[in-house]
Length: 208
Image 1: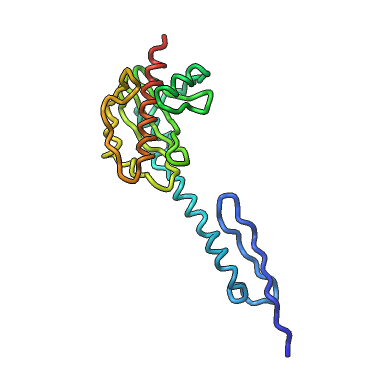
Image 2: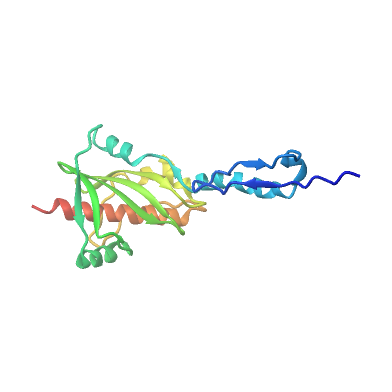
């Protein structure tokens, strides 16, 4: 009786972007799907990785496009706000959290400012764009969402609630924002971003 051919396969490692590597069967063997059935679960897992990564990094509006929309297609050059220890404490008092970065970019023309901010939802940062015009929110947009749940806050019916809102002397929004069932942490993140943008707008526009 002829000896049974031993199947041998080699698979390239999964690439850094999550794509499954190709599988090269050794010579003088049957094609690998007929000889290495246990590899199927691993292959299915590798194929699922890019889908998982995409679901947790949803880009609803590119930051560059948000800025173009905010300034009629031609945003001004970015300015830099330096966040020292004193300013960090002031932000902490208003928002409850403070930016980790020591410098924050913003865009300003006449009485309007635009901010691209990151606020933590449940575990991961939510990237938001906020435009403030003369002390009131003109628009708030969800740009990039990385959480598993809570993306309902992108709905225009929800974000329209922020339009026209101001910051009270106590650092709160001047009108209640209705929540969304199942997206409580995302709603809180958007409220913090709105308060932060209003506070920073007041800070930079009060400067000479």
